[in-house]
Image (cartoon, rainbow, N blue to C red; front, side):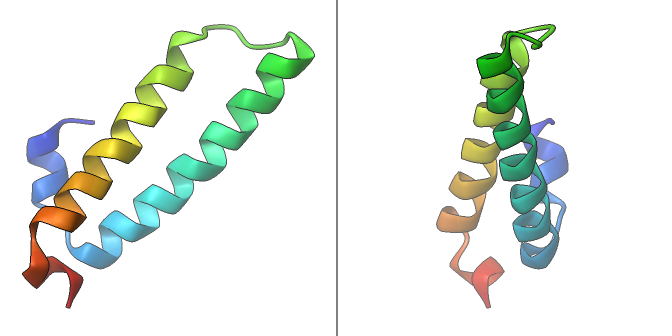
Amino acid sequence: MKTKELKEMSADELRHREGELVDQLFKLRFQKSLGQLESPMKIKAVKKDIARIKTILNRAPQATE
């Protein structure tokens, strides 16, 4: 996801998206442990998206209200 797209989202939408990404990361890690993961780069991309969302939420105090 692009940072520009994330900045346009509300705080509630960002928190919801973060939850979805955390669930997706769990599933990807589980697949990796079973040896069924198609692309290990997906884990890296999901982690980066989570970090982007957390950064946006922390930078914008008005977004947390």
